[in-house]
Image (cartoon, rainbow, N blue to C red; front, side):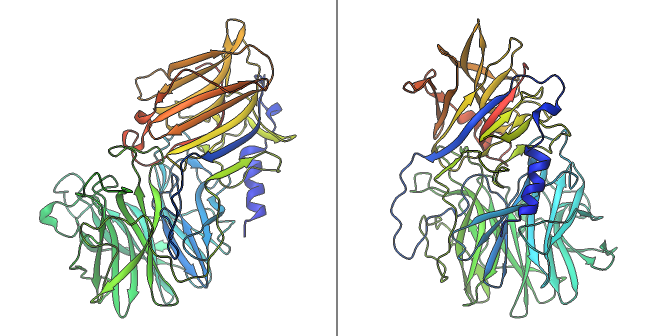
Length: 553
């Protein structure tokens, strides 16, 4: 179901502008391939179960919809481009990316934004004829909806809506539609993180919001306990009841999911007897297969009457540290006395839950892949930092990915010459071969592992005293040099292409280089990359790794 037209548009917008279009181009870096391999053993999965998570790597704020026998999901991407990946599944366990809702310039502009801004918490639904996504663009336009006949795309340009707050979600009933969303509470906030959930009708003819809105929840389940960050709401109608599903507690280790219901769409909504219905806070840190930060869920009902939910969570390698950020998980939903829940209090997220009663579907091999750059465009999984600039420094030709070093580096808020893919395992390796002859004025090219502007690792080829060298740098806070602190250096003894590897193992990274078919040689020793973990970098994103080229910073 991948939209070839959408991918072609993406290719033209992002990846296929000839490098010769730049004035006075720097030496081109040519990458022969990029290969990913998980380095950790996958335990056996008992029959009839699946291994959580279902969208590994940086895939927060999942939302999904069922249309016929098909399931579609979308997750947040913030200021990465293309934005809002669209996934398809037939069994809720195996997913395949079929496109991106934001895949062309002009839909939205991330210029000058930090990577943790941009597109937050999309919510996907279907009105019986079209697909809809309601979303917020932080610092780049506020709230909007987009539509598509085919979820693979193309998606429309945003229709901007006049209301405040974040995390909008559409609810359709008959020929009418409402948006439920997070915004400031009535009056002055009582404490930091005091938010409210509101309901407001959307006129589908004029695409204008009704003038009045209705308060559904003030603060959270128990206002006297000062609940924080009620957000990510969705409404469902079941057996004459309206159910309001929402997150609470912030997206870190105190994250949780809560449930309310009402006989009337506009309320009043009463909290359920078991709240939160999903959380991993206040649980033993030494529990096996530890999962943290659970919340921001969305439900679907299957044809057999069962209910299932996607939600975000993290899998720390230590304390709350992970390089993958928030990933997408799946669990069955249990109903008791008219109320749904994921887990009982104190119950850990199971590593191998039972499978939905659906025919096994086909998905993506997240553990191993290789891109030889022999297609006309990069696939929909590839990401770049912010909206492409008018003149791009990247192109595909002759079975290689070519980068002209850009003036904007990874620490900037500009347009670095970079494209990468998500880290999806604690232990994993990215490998490439690069052909690059840097000039005397500081050009560097190689691999970038990027969390955000203040947290990244580079392994690049540069000029060093009339010889080339592989230099490893780490930026672990905004006070570090823009290029990062030098961690290791290896002088290259021969001309020609060089192999580069970055291997991650939890909070440690190893960089290796290979010259002229010789054995791989480690560049320096182990590198502490726990300072790059999402818990130190705004919580929202995860590490993305790929080809990178920059002039002196």
